[in-house]
Amino acid sequence: MEAAMGLIRRMHPKKSQTALSALLSLLPHHSSDLLSQVDQPLQVLCDVDCGKEFILCEYNRDADSYRSPWSNKYHPPLEDALYPSSELRKLEIEANEVFAIYCDQYYEGGISSVYLWEDDYKEGFIACFLIKKDGSKTGQGRRGYLQEGAWDAIHVIEVGPEEEGAAHYCLTSTVMLSLTTNGESSGTFSLSGSIRRQMNMDLAIADGHLCNMGRMIEEMEGKLRNSLDQVYFGKTKEMVCTLRPPAEVVMRLPNS
Image (tube, rainbow, N blue to C red; front, side, top):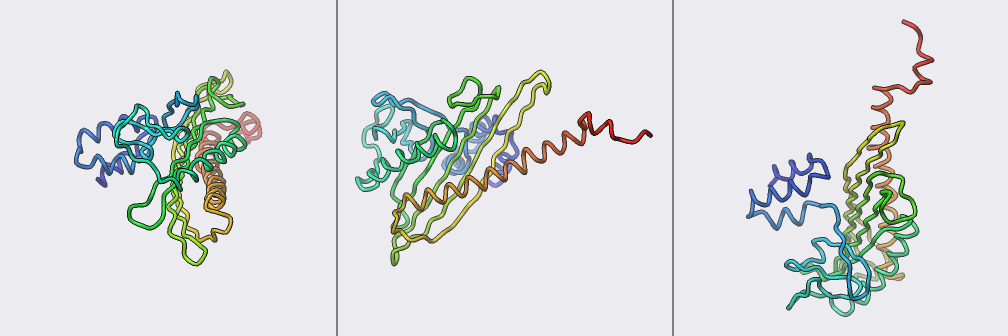
């Protein structure tokens, strides 16, 4: 299992789904661990009952069906499926409405979904916040300057039981980024990668769980964007400028 996870981490993100399928055939006894630990690019399905798209992931899957956060129905229909409690469902509806506004303001378009379910091991619950942004010229959103481009964000928050007016929150965030440009001056350029971070906080629940989770996700996404900017774009720019210095730099170099 350790070797399999090491192989997945070294694979190109665009080929991770193919690699996962191969590993599932080679290690069928580790299938549940692989599916829960390996993050894949997010897929989207349309809820025909309300005409809205929702994101597919392991957290809203039961057998081969996926539950929509908008209608609370499985697609395709499934008997004896798992559903959140009425209290969690009420919070889930509110979270989806708020997170859709967050997605539109921060990402200028895109698709968001939020799923909540009870924690079987603790007296709390788990929430999953998902964002998929297609930044390509043909994708959704108000800016599409890339030939191909995708931002997939997965935020999973474990919320502990209330103790003396406070609760413990454990946030695990993963962002998968891929982009391809094709310009006359720069040619074809492709960049892909993923990053994962974790945050733990004890917060008062006077303002409600949704406010606390929202603030944590907002802070974490800011940190992840800065890390991606420094690690992927910063290092790539440094390497390109080292191998192919800009014309103004070459002109200033002394003659040998």
